[in-house]
Every structure is written in structure tokens, then in C-alpha cells.
Image (cartoon, rainbow, N blue to C red; front, side, top):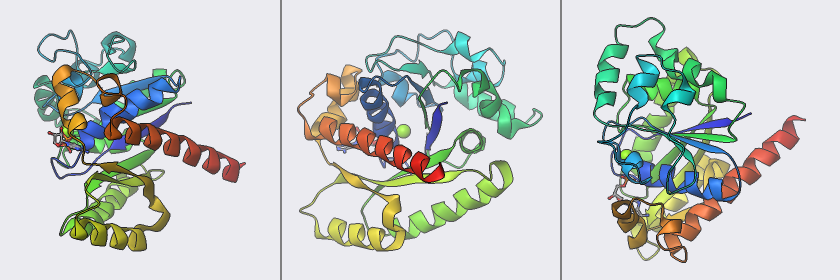
Length: 261
Ligand SMILES: Nc1ncnc2c1ncn2[C@@H]1O[C@H](COP(=O)(O)OP(=O)(O)O)[C@@H](O)[C@H]1O
Ligand SMILES: [Mg+2]
């Protein structure tokens, strides 16, 4: 049974897409079956997976609005060795059309039902807003992974985001959990980053991943080569950090399964 993880933060530029692409590739490298859904009309996760967003047969639009079967919209060839449902500007149209349809919050959840048993992990790269698309992601997900930069006001923003997630969850998906808070673009020489990181741990405890994603130029360069960092420079600190994150996600899941049994 797939674990469905939405990667969300209404702030732009915090590392959602970088996390989505690199954690999907890292998880696929551990022989798990992985699907990445690019729910952002910017299509950055699509391009970063080596797929031309201007030249795809279907996107999340066909999945959500035309209700094409999920198997027919999945792209199986990506540089990261995971499956992909592409995103591009058509997804903006999907967002508008969603407003008119019945049970619009549950479109993605229902669409994914036929493949929940096939994949081990499904990651959803959310747009930088709390739009109807993000609501669909939260309704479809088991948990939310929140990437954040350790900067001034980050904690305030995060508390507000957690409240919003809880409120949303109580309406569309009471089972929704916080998967974890991920520190991204981290610079250990920056004192403010260290202070914020400490506050974060005090406030959110175990929910903060031990793995920290460093600021690493390879992570920023890799998308222009249409590849996750591990296929662009596998020895880079960025590639290694995302492999470590995949390991931590796997260990947490095992621990929780043991606790539950
Ligand atoms: N750890 C990192 N080190 C260096 N650059 C990064 C890192 N993470 C993300 N970036 C860069 O920062 C920008 C924003 O990241 P992105 O993942 O697109 O954020 P979001 O999806 O939240 O908008 C991109 O140009 C990306 O390449
Ligand atoms: Mg993005």
C-alpha cells in the first residue's frame, strides 16, 4: 500500500520542488516503486525529471478534470527512475474548472485509488498557495512534509501553516498527519539559521527531521540538466542529503508500523 506524502508550504522558493524530485529519485534508488505528481502549474518538477512540460500528452488536468484513468496519464520514463504525472500551465485551467465540479476536494484522492496498491510511495509537489489544488493534495495524502528555510519569521509562518493544515484536515481528511518538517538550504555558518533551527526543534520536537538539506549549488544546477542531483553529481552534499532523508522517511515508517502492530 502506497504512502502518499504531500510536499507543501504556501511560501514559494523554500525547496518544495527540489525536495520532491530528489526524494522521489532517492526513494526509487532504494528499489521502491515511486510516483511523483507535479501539481504546480509551473511544471518545475516535470522539467527537473527530464520531461519537457511543453511536450506531454497528459498532465494533472486530464487526471482531475477529464477523469482519464491514472494509468493513462502516468509517464514511466524519467531521469530519476520514478513515474510522473506531469504539470504545466494546463493545471491552472484545472484549478479553475475544479470550482465547478462535484466533490472537488476528492478528485485527486479518488483518481489515485486504482494505483494505491501498486506504488510504495506517492509524492505530491504542491503549488505555493493554499489553492484548491493543495486542498486536493491534502485530501489525497496520508501525511504532509513541510520544507522550510531557517530564516527570520520562519517559525511564525510555520505555526500558521500547521494550524491551516489542521483546519483543512478536519474538513477533508481527518487522518492526515504531519510527516515531518525539513530544514532546507541550510548554512551552518549562519548564526540566525542555527538559532531558528534550535527554536524549531524545541517547538516541533521529533517532527523535525534529523536530516538537514545544506545549501548546495549542485541542487540548484541539476534541474537545468533535467535530472535529480544524484544523477548529475552523485558525490555532492545535496545528493547525499536527500538519500539520507529517504532513509529517515523509511525508518520512521517502519517504526510507526511496529508501534501500530
Ligand atoms: N538546498 C539547496 N541549495 C541550493 N539551492 C537550492 C536548494 N534547494 C532549492 N534550491 C534552489 O532554490 C530555488 C527554489 O527552490 P524550489 O525547490 O523550486 O522551491 P519551491 O518549490 O518551494 O518554490 C530553486 O532555484 C532551487 O534550485
Ligand atoms: Mg515548486
